[in-house]
Length: 333
Image (cartoon, rainbow, N blue to C red; front, side, top):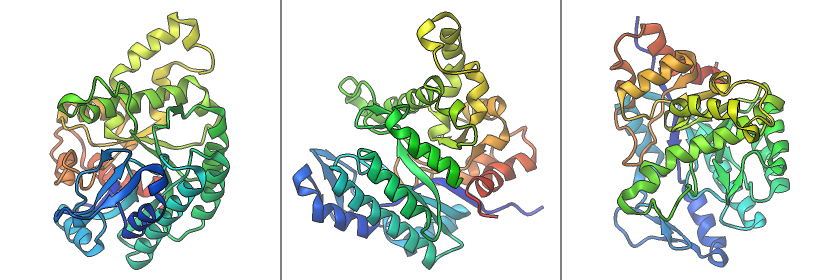
C-alpha cells in the first residue's frame, strides 16, 4: 500500500495582504510592520514582536517547495499570534478580511495544495458574525481559526455562542490556538510563555467549553485543539475529580469530563512520541491529525516522520492521522 500524502492542519500564514493591512490601520493601536531585518518582516503589536517572518510564511512557491520536501500535500492555512483582537472592531474586521481573502487566493492559485481557516474579529461579535458569513462563501475556506481567549474573555462567554452556533450550522470546524497565555509575568523567562503557557492555555479554553456547557448545547460542533491537546488529555482525570467533588465544577457539563475528550480533535505536535502515543491511546486514532506548526522553530520540519515513526499502530491508523481524519474534517473528499 502506498503511503498517503499528508494534510497539515496546523500551518501558519502571514500573507503580504495582511501585513499591508497592519501597516495601513495598525498605528492607532501601536501596531506595525518592521521591514529592516534581512531575515523577514517583523509584526509588532504594543511592544510584542514576532520573530522575523521568513519567506515561507508568505511566499507560496517557497512554501510549496518545503511542503514537497516534507511529504505534505495540503496545508490548512491559519493566522496565529497576535491574531486580530488587538485592534478595535472596525480595524479588526479589515484585518480579518485581508487574511481571509489572501488564504482564499492561495487556494484558487493552488486548489490541490491549500485551504483556508478563516480568522474573525471576535472582539466585536456582530462583526465576527458578519465576517463568518462572508468568509464561509470564499473559495477554499474549510474552517474557522480562533484564539483560546479573546482579550481575556473566555470562549464560553455568551456573546460568542452565536458564532459557535453558526459554525455548527455551516459545518465549519473550529481550530484553536493559544494567545495571551495565563500567568504571563511568571512565564517571561526561558520562553516559558510558549513552552508552558501555550499548552496550559489550550487546556483552560477546552475546560471552559466543557464546563460552560458549549459542547453540550452544540453537539455537532467540531473543535480541534493544538499541540496534542495541550495539557487537557493529561489532566482530564483531575478535572473530572473536581467535577465530582466541587459544586462550582458541576454547573453546566452534563457528562464526566473524560467523556468529552472525543468531542475534540487534536494535532500531533507533542514533541514526545510517548505523549503522542498516550494521546492516541486515550482519544483514538480517528481523533488525531497531522500538524507541523509551520514554520516556527517550535514546530516540526519533518511532521510526517513523527507519525510514521510511531510503533505498534496499524498502517491504517497512520493513514488516518496523516490524511484521512483531516480529509473528513475539512471536507476535502
